[in-house]
Amino acid sequence: MADESSSPASYIRLVQHLIEKCICYDMDKEECVKALEKHANIMPAVTSTVWKELEKENKEFFETYKKDQGEQRTSPSSEQSSASRSSDDNDN
Image 1 (cartoon, helix red, strand yellow):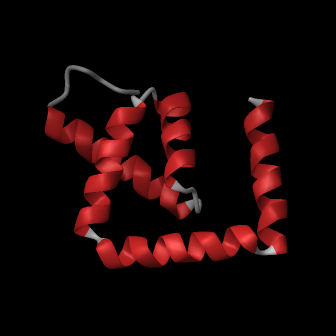
Image 2 (cartoon, rainbow, N blue to C red):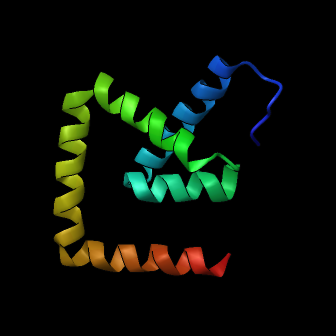
């Protein structure tokens, strides 16, 4: 999916869009990095860098997102959801 012939700016926009999709699926940074590497052939350093820049530009959003992530991961229903997500990853 990563097309080396496109401009760096459009590549970064693509990575940003994919990160936003990961956020819609309630993934944390580590899960997003792994997913984009596996499914979109995006280097982890690129995903991580773009994620950090998004955090800088959207501090309040990411503070709330991380807080909500922490709360979801400690609730019993999220453990079941997380476990099913892990088993889905192993199926591929």
